Amino acid sequence: MAVTERAPRTRALAPSDLFAVDDLLGDDERLIRDTVRAFVRDRALPVIPEHFEAGTFPRELIAGVAELGLLGMHLHGYGCAGTSAIAYGVACEELEAGDSGLRSFVSVQGSLAMFPIHKYGSDEQKARWLPEMAAGRAIGCFGLTEPDAGSDPSSMRTSARRDGGDWVIDGTKMWITNGSMADVAVVWAMTEAGVRGFLVERGTRGFTTSDVHHKLSLRASVTSELSFDSVRVPDSAALPDVTGMRGPLSCLNEARFGIGWGVMGAARACFESALEYSKTRRAFGKPIGAMQLTQQKLANMATAIVQGRLLAHRLGTLKDQGRLHPVQVSIAKRANVRAALDIARSARTILGANGITLEYPVSRHMANLESVLTYEGTEEVHTLIIGKELTGENAFGD
Image (tube, rainbow, N blue to C red; front, side, top):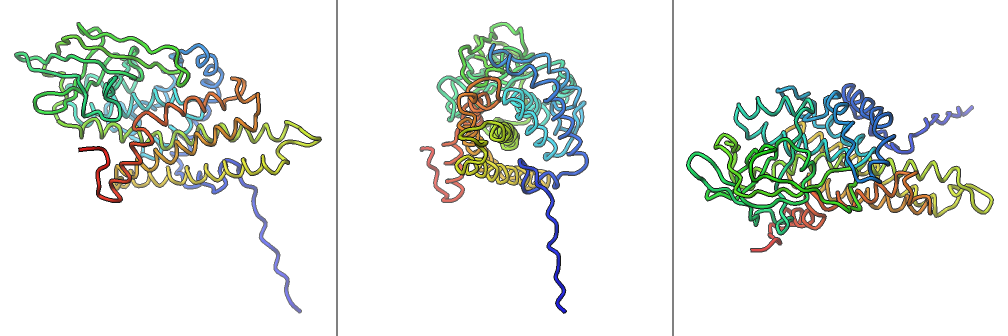
């Protein structure tokens, strides 16, 4: 008599984690995920819509973010947590599920301000700034982009010249996250020897900031212009261990890594909002989730989230193994931001008119992702970085 085998019982899948990507996390990384997710749910989400509408940054969250050890968390020593790259990525994903402005604050503080001090700074610079910045008692910003030098930062006009034992800085930086909040600005300027980094403190004579207003994106974030009018700083303010564009570009790669993870949090928030709405909103006598076209949209979103999260996790593994290549960062930044933006737009169509209100997070994320698509290298720039690696030909110009 033939024996009939029972089909194995399949377990229910989490809609936003159909490939069980979270199973790849270690215990410490799961703890960070759960802790940051709870912080975002309990502390950030209740206030983010109000700040987004008002165009203000939720400064009341800084102390809590610092207490969680998220500022410079992937750096070692000086009060920094020294976590894995994957743990940092997981934190970015959870923060951006709240709002891109919150993740941007943490990215700028850790990857763009603390990282260059940690990697290229003097012992005195590290001891002075890093513990204060890790504790959230000092805020930093990253001054690279200029009004006429965005995608081509090597054409910057901000200059620094020697004057005795000092440096004198002149120029303007634009679109600087945390700019007017910052206690110290990491400013990149052209010198006779090439691009150098300088730590310019708030209150230094000739150093002023002004905020960008009337933004339609990243509204819960401070965006500023930095102006330098014969700003004199001592030689001890210069980062001693790097000259040339290698310095700022290495910082951008750190930030881009966090973006590749973070935007998947925004995508997940949009998908989950649309999925829940599709189960409760009824049309033509049934939930809109029963409509074929709605299911197609949801299936496409869920698939893109799987792909993006697997890409981000592989990126983190390579970074932890010391094998990360800048082109891999460009691939993740380019692919995942585009996927997240497309998910947000598709989710908005499922929510209909409700999707354009702050009662739901979708249009807020959608607007923010328009900025994320542009900053830390536009989609076009990353396309050409990848193209150069593939062909050996430089399409950026002579």
